Image 1: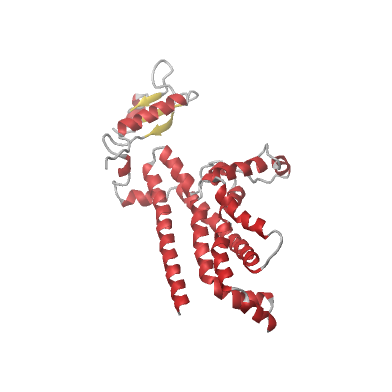
Image 2: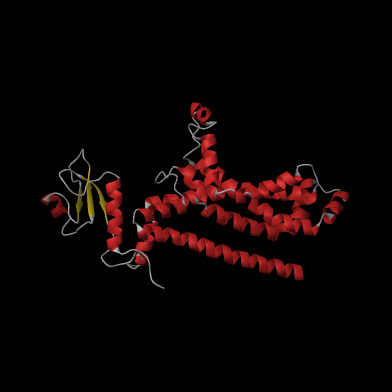
Length: 317
């Protein structure tokens, strides 16, 4: 199969076009972008023979503002990690990468216990009881799957943004919700909450309530009923749902992208950091963090298979 990733010439064309669209001047009297060398001889000496691909200067200062490096001539972008494993780990140790990793872990640690509680309660209600709004509650579980994550993010932005329904009230009380961790947690919770309930409902419906009824007759409390009777019956389905929910939370992109604000070092999760790094031609950083998500995906599949195998063995016994 032919590799369609762009070479350096294509990368340079993309950079030139983007710079021009952003108002930078590569030619003429107002030129403030210099290719392969800085503007002054003194700056060239400071670089000691190094030739940056692009040096950008601010209109207000004579000092360089930004340096952009494209790929080496003739190389392909998919060889971003060919310079060794050291660069891979160095990219993961960058402050922005560490901040993105920590934020992703923190959001998952907040969302997962809430998802477990909501999932167990909803599954218990739907599987064991009949009530008027049961069909509505069941339909609610399908809502996050039927709405695009981007639309979910936009919905919360319209509700809690500065110009949204409750944005002014939040601003008056100095509550920062949008473009901060709380908004990321809420949208992640919205798109992941059905996963645990969806995993539990078939198991709980199939096993019935006879053991729970026997425990109630023998005088068991609600907590004893759940802890000693229901939980052992559903534990493998619960573990399966937790694995799915955690993987989805860590990999969520669309909804988080809308409400995060893309604030570097503060509101970028791993998926957002990968996108930003790739768009800025920082391919080592992008591929290093993307590999973490790939490892999570592979690990999730492995854990799913293990849980399925153990559950099948338990049923056979």
